[in-house]
Length: 273
Image (cartoon, rainbow, N blue to C red; front, side):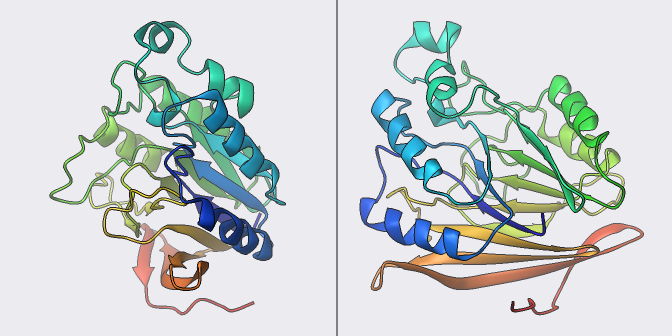
């Protein structure tokens, strides 16, 4: 598992249909070992929207690991949101809301950060922290430890959405658990850097994907990430949609190096393969 594609916030029901084929073509052309999707597959958690998401996932050649987002629970049906918030998600996408995958190069733990009663604001609970620790127990020696979650654990200043509950505690706990990378979405904006609030000074990489297909782009193009895992080096390559050609092309890249204190961002170029 040396090449991981990370995309998020597809929002079928408020998507851009003209980008679906180019997105799939680019994803399948990158020969990834895993495609991680960090939530919000639908706009309103309707069966038709989940069916569209299922068709999209089935068209991906690589194995996939998917976690739900807040839009994947019914917004307007309070009774269903209270008692069966993930019924449609489980039917169409996956019964496991927190999947785990292991390989010699990486262990990936999915976390369901959705709080159905919070509507938009997520929650990284103490139970989720314990789940991450359990998931990493089976990690191979030297494997990178990756968490996939919908809600980010840190926001840029000025972000209007509320930070999810338990985020600050989770950052510290994930660092203690040896986490190397956190993949998230939700904000429809791209970001790749180390956490600013890491209390034990151990660098952990946070990578946000914007939105893969939604027409709510918030000033940024539709995009996804390709992570190159090379032991003590991680390269994050962003592919963004070019509207004039309806294709996803190289847009930005960030590189990270691991030392005794964890991960730090560096200026090493991405190795072209």
